[in-house]
Length: 554
Image 1 (cartoon, rainbow, N blue to C red):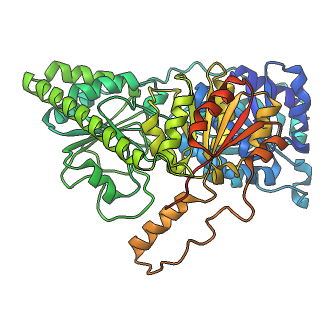
Image 2 (image 1 turned 90 degrees about the vertical axis):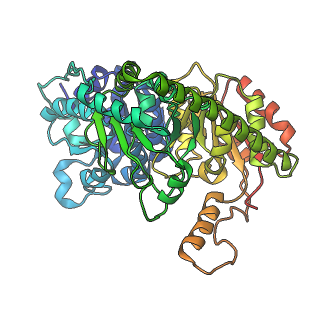
Image 3 (image 1 turned 45 degrees about the vertical axis):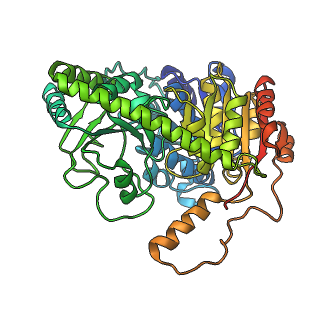
């Protein structure tokens, strides 16, 4: 049989249902094989970055490994930024790219380059298949490596001539692997002993809590010890219900500010994440001196990597959280349980007061024009159904979104990791393919939207009923905030106007951009029209864009 058939059968045997791609000539063997494999749907993108981000978000939303298909060196280069995001998100994606005929490799052929070297820094494993006999074993390993904890993207280079070679080595089924790791009982006892000594514990929850479906177990633990629960600053999921009294907010971007918001916390438990991904340098640690750090991770790779840990364990996140809660229940005194309940009551009161303070601040700018972000997100919440899935790349509006929407757990929220923009519109494609039975709404800034505006065409082409909400303030607002921080941190001494951070002259017109790609769109300039516009967009049952004019930085 030919190598290309082994490749396609490898995809099928490993449960792949969709290939997200932007094709080229060297991908002809794969594309021409598609009619023989109707169980594989090719989701066509007009840019490789869109294909990779869509595949990454699909893998996060579905829990399934998937494939992104790119085109030789320039195509892989176009996808590198999105590959970085997939790596930071730990998305199990097998990324392939066609390579030129190996018989020309010493002649520097058009579009040829060392694809393995290009992809290596942003993948768990990067490899080129050199002969057809390698296709089956390399694909088996690629899917294994992509799904080993911590999960992440793998790259496979596919020379066009190798895919046309004959081979007797057939596609391999995935290995029967049971990866669930139970935590060491001694480690659980050590963590429990330290938690029982704490009077003001805090938990910082990472994406792996949601990926392991451990939100309920984390709720039980937080309630048992009366802990505050914080999120990482950049996250892919909501690993704890944001309406719960123990929930606080997302951590800021430097160690000094993290110490400030943690306040008088006397113990911090890190669960399922890289911790801590700072934006700015600040001297000192992320917790006050003498405060013990505990950690629960699904693999040894992250355990105690960036932080000194008083006690840490490796184990399935949900299982470990339940085991820890059970150990605490067996050992906790009546006084400890009473104190935990008291902390829960205090946190509920604090949350109520903060909500009231936020409401009062929002009311001050409620009728401003252009509309304020608190007003905009409140109107979005009013117009969207309870089962909405939010794909968030609003950046400076993210904190307001978190206050307006109650993310209950896995599937309610998807954001981008790594800090690179352009993931939102593209990611919504993958989420919609993975979760077709729920309304998917992508909320994006206008600057971010332009990084992947081709996503609108893919949504129209595949009839994906995504509602794209573009918040148009005609500026890179986050950059202006960062300039302010930079000026303060480095005592720059400049106070002139922000440079090259306004998206004007000409003004972007997202209604016409969407129309040109087959997506119905509307512009909303009055806050009281937002709820009706987004409700109509969801009810349309087709891709739809709502451009909302919002205020800029004041």
